Each structure stands twice: as structure tokens, then as C-alpha cells.
Amino acid sequence: MRPTMKDVASAAGVALKTVSRVVNGEPGVHPETAERVRAAIDLLGYSRNESARVLRSGRTATIGLVIEDVADPFYAGLSRAVEDVVIEHGCLLLSGSSGEEPTRERELVETFCARRVDGIIVVPAGDDHTYLRAELEAGTAVVFADRPPGAGIDVDTVIVDNAGGAARAVRHLREHGHRRIAFLGDDPAIFTAAERLRGYREALGELYDPALVSMRSPSPAGVRDDLDRLFALDDPPTALFTGNGRYTMTTLRALRGRRVPLVGFDDFELADLMEPGVTVVAQDPARMGKVAAELLFHRLRGEGGPAERVELPVNLIVRGSGELPTPR
Image (tube, rainbow, N blue to C red; front, side, top):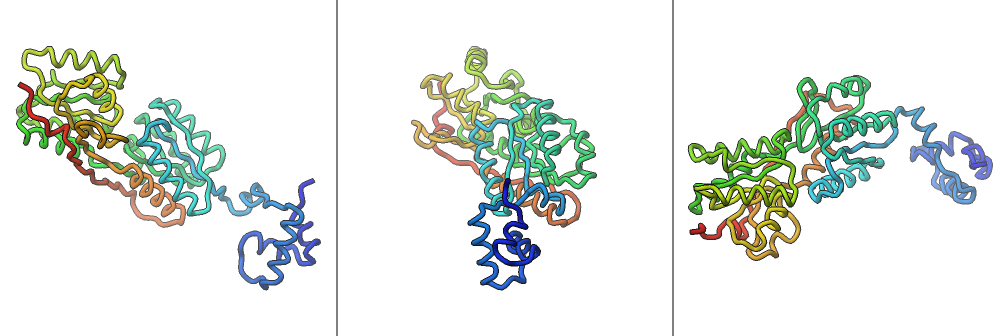
């Protein structure tokens, strides 16, 4: 049998309420008495009954996190930052990957809610989040990160300036003499991909040519096919803008050392060690995770007010690939 709080009280020669105060970190216990209780806890191997605590407080001290892919460096950085904030608040983080599947996203969210998490941070895969209404009405705190929720759900959201970052990348290439700039991006159904396409189009203006756009989930074979098509055009691109870190790396592999001016959205490991270094529009996944988690605990503290939409800035890092001379 596991030792109970009553066993600890008996071993320490104190009242049950005294043990409860020590276990829960409450004031009002003499230091010597508290030390005697802690010694009894160590001797007996007592551990707090979390289920009973949850019933009393209504809180589980757990937070759920749904991301796209835990193997993606961007989401790994976001997840670590969320976890750091969660730990600071004495809570436990449960996380899962949706794999960009709306059904999987909903299953994860509903599983976490069934486990009575206090709050959830969601990187959405779908655009229908009406299933969250019941949880929001029940008091579960929800924050969206990287992408906003679908219509009808008004919760705190943390995104980056996707369109502005893409426009900045294209303007940078135009300043280096490029007029035919191709865009290789993710599925346009994804919010971030669509926003980056919007920024790309706005920065090109009258130079925009839909023949220079390819958008789908990145794969080595797909990117090679896209590059072959683009460079076979009568008026081929002289520069490339890639829509995320995975696309940038897949494109660089497909180029096989061919020196094509390129700017990528998202920084990635070793980008500065390549020859030339890869010029990127960098966002900060750690900052996104930290801001999202702090917003969540802001709501868990009972602080009200309208839902916030935080748009974080991006930063152009010039390393050489975007500054290569225009191919002749």
C-alpha cells in the first residue's frame, strides 16, 4: 500500500492539516515542524495524490501542444520554448504532431481535453475549429500559433509577418537586378504559404508571372521536376525564392551545386556555412513559442479582455546566395 498523508501525519506527530500545508507549500507551519514533516515524507516515500488534488482545485497543471511535425526544426524550437514557460509555471507539457492532417489535429486536441488539460496551444492543420467551442465554453484556455484559427473562433493568436517577409525577400532580389523571380512554396491551402505567396505577388507587381510559381508539399522528386520546368521556360527565372526551410534545403539539393541566386523563408542549421551562405528571411520560432505560452498563462490567471493577435517581425539575413550575379 502506498503511504497516505495520514501516515505522514502519524509518523511526524502532527495534524493532518499540517501535512497538507507542507505538501502544498502553504504558509503557517513552524520551520522545525515543516522539517519534521518533510523527514517523514522522505522516510515513508510519500508522494502527493494528483488525482485528489485535481478534484479539489479543478486544475491538472498540464498543457497540451499540437504542432505540425516534431521533427521539423522550426517546430522543435517552438516546442522547446513552450516547454520552458510551462515548466516555469510548475506544469507538465503534453505534445503531439498533426502531420498537417486536420483529422489528426482534432483527435489530438480532443484527447488532451479528455485528459483535462488546463490549456492548449494549437498550430492548426485545418480551418474548421468549431469543435473547440464546447471546450472554450467549459473554460479551457486556447492559443493558436503560426497560423490563425478558422472563422467563428476568437482566441489569442501568434503569427509572423509572412507577407511582409516574402515581399522583403523579393525586393532584395529585385534590388540585385532580378525581374524573373520564381517562387517554390508549400501547399497554398496552408495559411503561411498563402501569405508568403501574397507578399511575393505584391512585391513583384506587374512583373508577376504565374508560370514562375510552384506550390505543393516539398519532395525531392517534385522539386527537381519543378526546377526542370522553370528553367526550360522560354524566359526562365534568374533567381529563386523558396517558401520555407524544408523547401530551401530540398531546392539546394536539387540544384546540385548550380549557383542560382536564392533567398529562402526560414533560417536553418548550417545555412551560414554553405558556399555561398544562404540568404534568408528569418523568423524566431522560440519567440513565437514563448509569446504563445505566456498568452496562455495570462488567460489561465483569469485575465480577460478581447482576443489578441500578435504579429512578430522577421529579419533578412544577407549571406551571399541572394546576392549572386544575375546568370547570363
